[in-house]
Image: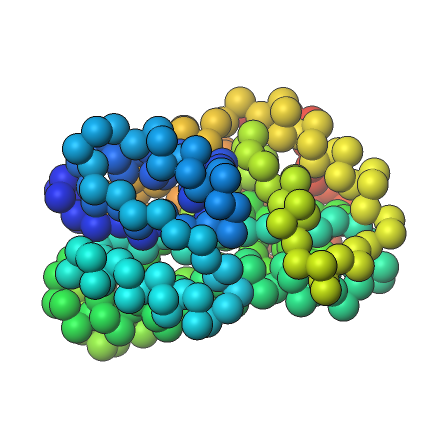
Length: 284
């Protein structure tokens, strides 16, 4: 898809971070926007960043709930007639060793990170296919969806699943003869609010890993040192859509860790802790 002006984009997780940056980037292209998030205040702040003349709808949406995502689709298609770019971007994180992760950690993280993407696909893709126009489904995974990161087992599991789901979706669409394309976004550490995503965690899922603190400090330090901004990621993502690039890897270090992981798999070697480490600063 080369021409973005006048197209319709739906972005979940639009209240902050990469989602907000995607909204700003899409608005700069002259797109019509439907922005969704559980964070109503953050969503309003994103809406205020949109330039005059850009058609924007904002709505609170818990992507882990299929009915909420179906309502989001009704809003988008009802107001704008079609959706050309679907950014399944909402995400949360829970940290700590796998053995001390709580059932609530699993339910919350998989509910948002994996089911949120699946709900987006189920609610939007059939209608996008029926429209018969060019379009892209962009699923936000992570560099942690391509490697293993100590203290991030729950998060990594959810993001590896998003990568696999995106690969399967691309094959399914090709087999169906659809014009729709898929991209999977796999950034490493970026200065976003994901480390604070627990502030919107449902009360009934509040019980979390008791051993998360040292991992949380490490991730925050890495995010603060990151030289790749959310805006950088958004610009790279729109360019990848234009270039029909399936895997989007904004951080060169992720590519190196993927290569190392594949060498270990093909060489039948066990993974070591340094595979996909959380570095204090992004490697060049």
